[in-house]
Length: 125
Image (tube, rainbow, N blue to C red; front, top):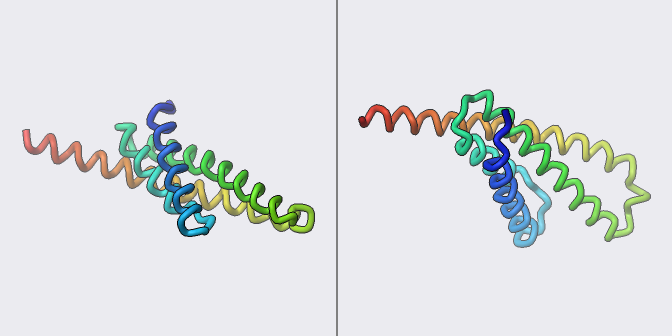
């Protein structure tokens, strides 16, 4: 079952990282934002690796869609949307797939970090 509260918090966290990176570095790379957001959601859900994978994939999909909207707005601002329509579609599909895969990896890492921290807390007691 999807836990929406940690997912929404992680989405806002990832979007904030993405926007800061977009404004400061003038690059439209969201891979770091997806990875850190997926690690955060994987850690916060207190679930298994399977739960981390599901939540990380959802985060990657949602952030991928947000990045697509930003890219389309940027390209339309340059007036190139009509000329680049076909190549944009291919790039967008590849971008979403890459975002989902990075989200999967981050969700697994977050779940592993959480399970490792729980083991160390139980060992101390």
